[in-house]
Image 1 (cartoon, one colour):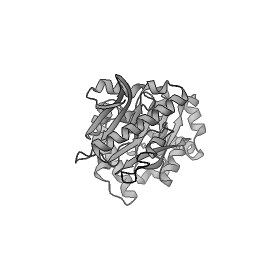
Image 2 (image 1 turned 90 degrees about the vertical axis):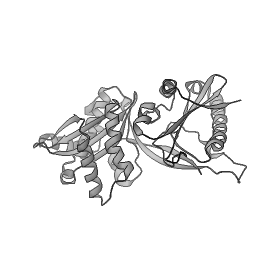
Image 3 (image 1 turned 45 degrees about the horizontal axis):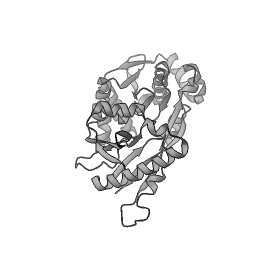
Image 4 (image 1 turned 180 degrees about the vertical axis):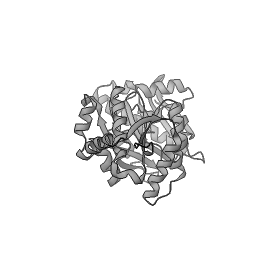
Length: 316
């Protein structure tokens, strides 16, 4: 009934991503290439009708990676979204169950990050439901923060809706001569990112260094990223913020600060200026890319972002 196949046509893949309800930057080939990880792109189809796209991120051993980037998983086609509710529910369940059987056969282990718009995950829970000898699925709940820009008329409303301390920091920084500017200087981001980890008594992993250097550079070069640097009145960098963008959403990828200037709150100022840019570009959302630790989650929701659950699917 259904068939699964490798997609070798990046243009065809990106068109599916663009028109899918799960459309997101991290499934687009420009980001996948910037991320510099091996990956497979798969189509699930019935006849010539494409019903789903699947991103499989691979590790150095060629097996599916345990922790793919956010939302690197499945994307239903616009055809599925056009169905009436009961048909859509049945079709999605059937396709997911078919997909998991095929992926288990092809790869053995499976690791997917599911977009927050997917609200019926029973097909993932039911895999091998009656076969306890087969690989058993695990769904892990995470949270991101979403700021709905469609409900916001201007930047002043962003300031008013944010927590009081964010407004106070913003006004204080302007008063004290801090400035925010767009930059392509990745070395500043890298330096402040390292300082942020040092303040917490931590050392950056190779993947964290990669995010603040090579991925940041590639994102700027490909036009899908924007780096903002806050400087004091003497031109000393105090905070940095790297956002990534698709046609609909701005994604908060990295925030970094010099601990010596934390009391001024410039980390919040660069985020607010990124939000201002998202509004000016006509985007619909800001995705704060995870609010799963107490301090980080509290900071990100202080911009009036709402918690939204998303799930990781593992089967090993």
